[in-house]
Image (cartoon, rainbow, N blue to C red; front, side, top):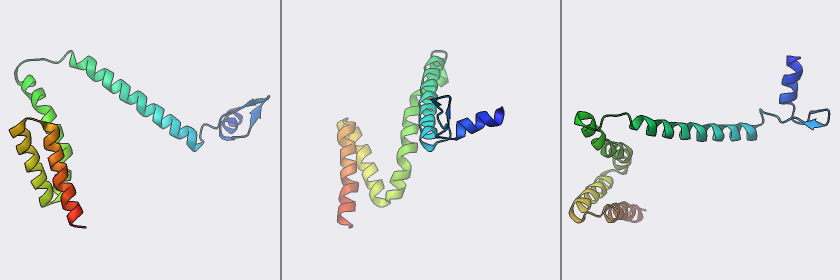
Length: 125
């Protein structure tokens, strides 16, 4: 019995009494299953974090930690690119930080940093 069920699941063209059986191990179905699983896991994680955030303290050292967290995450994302770009990456990062501090417009500061790296890549080709 178990062997016949497994055979039905793994044989794409097999039909039982006129009903087509889907091959669950087909790469297209596995891809769809992986995408669906990732989407469900992402939604569950976001909902879980929102529910957990209501329970966290909003004062003291934990508040300070949470306020510093976005900056540390940004640094951990940007730093490998800065290091990989070499001296021009450091120049672009410094320019971006100085402009963001001076003019207060992060978008314009980021555009200036990207322009420095793009100009370096254009000139070094």
